[in-house]
Amino acid sequence: MSQNNQTQYDDNNIFAKMLKGDIPYHKVYEDDKTLAFMDIMPQAKGHVLVIPKQKAVDLADLEPEYAAAVLMTSKKVMAAQRQVFEREGVIQMQLNGAQAGQTVFHYHVHLVPSSIHELGRHAVTQADNAELAVQAEQLAAAIYA
Ligand code: AMP
Image 1 (cartoon, rainbow, N blue to C red):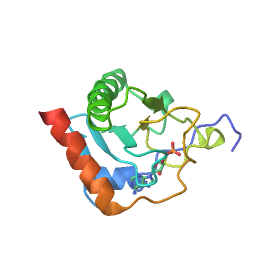
Image 2 (tube, rainbow, N blue to C red):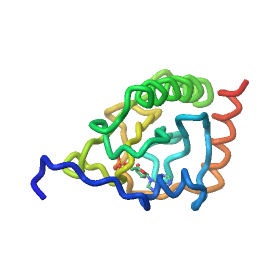
Image 3 (cartoon, protein in one colour):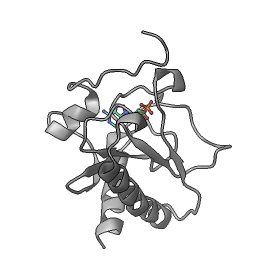
């Protein structure tokens, strides 16, 4: 496949499995069009992923109503991160295609409470599950307060 041909959506990708309820995750927020959960290999404390409930590999596939829904959920998550982690700086990041470093081929927005100068390595170090559970609870409580 040439580098500018898009990857096909795989119904068994890890985020599709989460949406089907087949694998566990630390939920932060859910509505009819989106799901937000803790990144298991965070690039900073409190790293959250927001995904649409649409079969989209990357930005090219994302339908307008899901694009809007992902951004609205991202705003909620970021507000909660600012409150819980007591910092203003949050990076919003999203990778399109393996060439860009994308590793899970279901569209997702990264929200990382960090500075571009301090960002940890991408998808390398697994976080402690108990810590992720606490962070997810704190963020969810801030969103639903
Ligand atoms: P990307 O490289 O932009 O596709 O990012 C994929 C992200 O998914 C990485 O930051 C990984 O740490 C994260 N990730 C992979 N598997 C899981 C999982 N089971 N639960 C939560 N996050 C995951």
